[in-house]
Length: 243
Image (cartoon, rainbow, N blue to C red; front, top):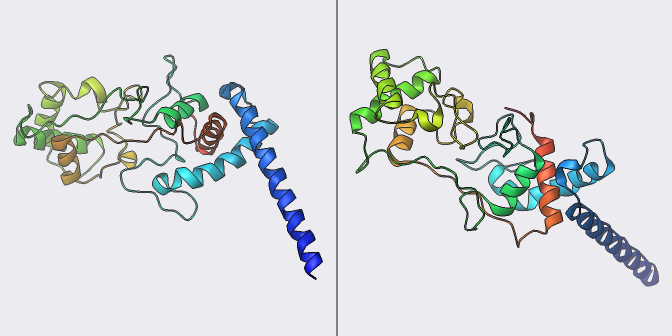
């Protein structure tokens, strides 16, 4: 029996080493190719999806959720059909696997020289430029754009004047609140994707205090191949690759 156990343990060790070698070769292969050139129908893409799923569960799910792990508060759902920050292609801003790879590698507003930090939602209350009344009016307008029914239309009308005038909110969020993925500015007409709450109090708080989420940079924590595998998994798992 002892001899049998020894043989089984040796066989298991060989299988683990083989798996480790296979995974290492996969990561080397991924590191050497342009991520956007990997076709979804290819064998490499399928293997990357499986490896990326494991990496996502290990490094990303604690915030973004997945499987049995719930998504954290104020964190985007990467499996839905909406990308808050769009791709870098100026023609359409549609997200590509390479865009996601860069977010993983460099982070968003992270402690990395190459991190994405194009914009943030600035605080408009306190010592800033909007009065509490103006913030209240803008919040009412934002809720109106979101389709809320329990609003005061007259207050929302005043809010629109602040939004398009003194507040300058349209610079990022668009003339009618349609958002701008190029800047990471939320689409105010789609409250199902808002990160900080849909209530009047939540909207008022964001306008007053601002908001700027952070995603860590994984360069140096994951290998180039691991970052590509994770990006391929996120990209391939999303319900829509457009907006």
